[in-house]
Image 1 (cartoon, rainbow, N blue to C red):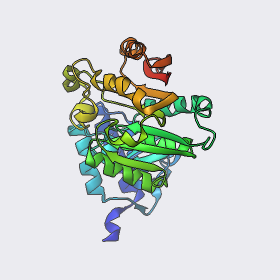
Image 2 (image 1 turned 45 degrees about the vertical axis):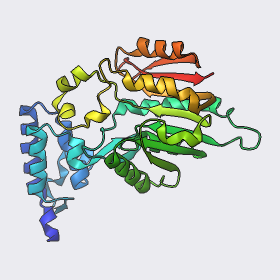
Image 3 (image 1 turned 180 degrees about the vertical axis):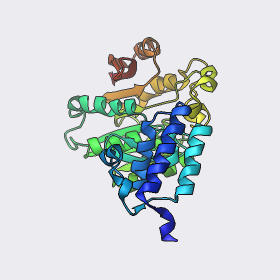
Image 4 (image 1 turned 45 degrees about the horizontal axis):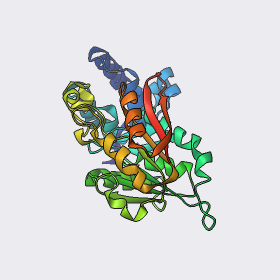
Length: 305
């Protein structure tokens, strides 16, 4: 029945108090409780902080309270990420649908879009006389579609090409693109890295990727939220974490236009190795390393010679 999803403000207040106490005991960030209630109950942060909802006669939830409680217990006991609990991950100014089929998009990855924006002046010179505004960007290993959607939002005149090996990830990326109004701007392909883009050799204005970059032996020692629930296909970068990055360094010059952008995220401690790979490949210039908001060298950018 519809009212199975309705609770009184007092009931929800009691649930929140218990959830906060359980989060503290389990060493889970207390902020996750209110983030969850914002998504499930539609309450804003101020209402939750002031507890002004406590006297409301009825609050409609997106799912019954017992089901919400079961999901919260999974968060605590199985370390299920809260984004998988709600099925939603906020990223830039979007809300993306996520599941264990895709890596949860992190706030630091938003910086890749900012770096793409910063390179946009150079991109304006990539067109030819007949089609000066035609830009093609590839998002390699798109997962939830976050980067592809960010690019489509940022470059309204560009065509975005999003690839992933996982059918489930592609389905989710397509759904996110459809929901957010970018379905007609993004082409989706199933395949490994550049393999489905033979028709775009020498035509890409830019490529962007958040590839697997964790050394294989480190994956089991990551936070349980990551190693138990997020797809290892999107995490494991081989013995030294650089297998996928090496491939992107080696193959991208075949697909990028002269002056095209090569842009990736990497792990702390990999910057020197990635810069060396780009330098020794011989087809890149203006190689640059950028830090994330924590000051960690996290991103590499270069241009096709």
